Length: 375
Ligand code: SF4
Image (cartoon, rainbow, N blue to C red; front, side, top):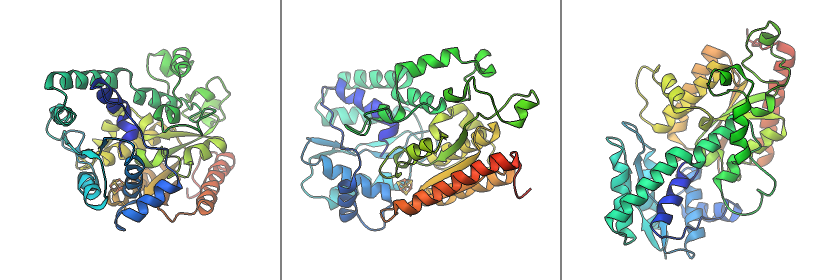
């Protein structure tokens, strides 16, 4: 489920333990159908899809990684469906290879990660010393130079997330993140005032150097927006970055000439600053990330609309999205749409809603001079 967040960590960790890694195929109709057929009806779409991916790997591997995620951050939890996933899989699917179903619980301490790694190493027959080394290597790599940072950079800079040839082949997050060496070098020459002060430039690469249409720049003030329309897409990474399940939302937006910001484009420190304004700390890791990122984008004026991509039946989304929408509308008056997906969602209806939303944002920009129609 957390492939789009931790793929590089797992890749490095298991490779260092001498394991060969096989990733399930890119999500497709067969994987979805298999998942829906074998999973309980009440589960949300990503869980059904996870079943499909497990079935896709069943006959190809000796072990499948199905960790029991309880918490990946201090005093926060992951959705309980993650916790029950190994049991659900084990008791409903037949003929499975071994499951690496170690619990990962970092609610009290980050050492929970090491504990889980040692258990995984034992399952694969590696001694403790080797496992600890592999864990340190993977953690160092993850912090320093892993795809997630590059991925965030590319999202931030409005790079093409779908380079030529990405239709074919595996299910690689670098490909979806539009990872490239050139991308990281581009940031060095950014003319934006923020970068000259040593801060990270908030504007997409594609907009730098272009004449800005925002009224603020005409008055000589610093413009918070670029020439191209920019939309914030809020949702779980396994929905947003999976091209099949999201109905290729990110690419469709790009094709409409719209830049995209996702939660991953916002720094953790900014997310935490916004989340700390809530009267109570968020119970859910995703809730804090989504709320903090959306409010940060809105406060900075980086986006002109929000699309909330939500799975039908997701308990967390049902209240987190509502909370975000209320705060965004009340404080910033930015248009907000929730697109709910499930296994019955039709692409035509999805596209129509998306086009109508983008058209409305374009019309608003041209005709309303950024002032809300409702006043
Ligand atoms: S957070 Fe929502 S979408 Fe994700 S697994 Fe839980 S119920 Fe499903």
